[in-house]
Image (tube, rainbow, N blue to C red; front, top):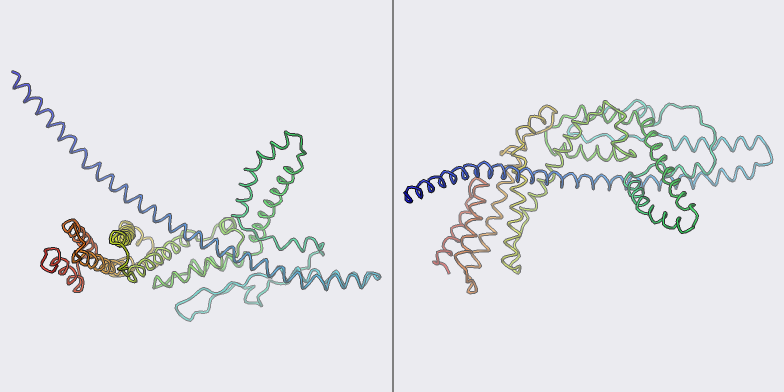
Length: 421
């Protein structure tokens, strides 16, 4: 009886083990899929961060150029206005003639930006807005009433960078507690009130700048809408040039998203897809250039050199894997939006990127073979296994070896077997 009980208990434990093993397999598969999804999202986040940094840089340059040009215009107009006013103060007719100079300065500030034509693969004349074609300015409007000199001087700060506003607000909120502590100690609340007033004024100026862009840049934005909707490129490099041009034009707006929100006809889906394709292609091309120009440093320690090569191969495989997993849906979306998609195939840039990993395999095997041939090597088996494992990994990724890589592998094999040491 005890023996039968033991056998039944063993059978029960075996069944539980089988059930546990059956559960492990789908969990491991799900875990692997989640890891791939996390890596894809990380790559997408890094790409978006790079794009955001580029946009901030271009926006800041535009703001600096705008401030410099406005300052130059103001310094040129103010002396003549003040001279004419001071010289003609005694007579009423002279005063009116001096006042007519101010609207002319204002009219110069309200000239509409002439959009640069987008880069085109063929010699096609772009369709510019009507007011741009007719002499680079809008139809003449009645001059506004003359403004005080203080308001003219303050118009230079109309265009604001949203990031500056956000940083300012965050700092004022953080310092609010400090101001409150000083108020309880008996100090006046003037400083805190000034901060609140300044914040409200800045916010009001920012919203006014957005409203001004929506009203005065309508023809400019319609021109960009037409260009994005009609964009149909044959090569992905042309898309990269077009997106660069589009971002430069949009950076002239105070806040791209806030202004374009007032134009429901803006083709946001196609603009985002163009940017996605351009930045993905640019990142891949940059990574491919980094791989093709990789050179091993003989003075670098072995472990550090191997880690550097492995890290580069990891980045390469991760980038290609992200594209291949989403290739079917992405290529269909690109086809619908007339965006080149053939570069995502193995016969395009993706295939070239896979073949470029052969250079990493050669450098890796050469370094290990050199180490195995040295007298200081004390762990031949593990080092040989490490080299063969990496060679197999690249072989599967690239779909095979070329002649030169085969020769390097054969040499590693001879050294590892001890026939060439």
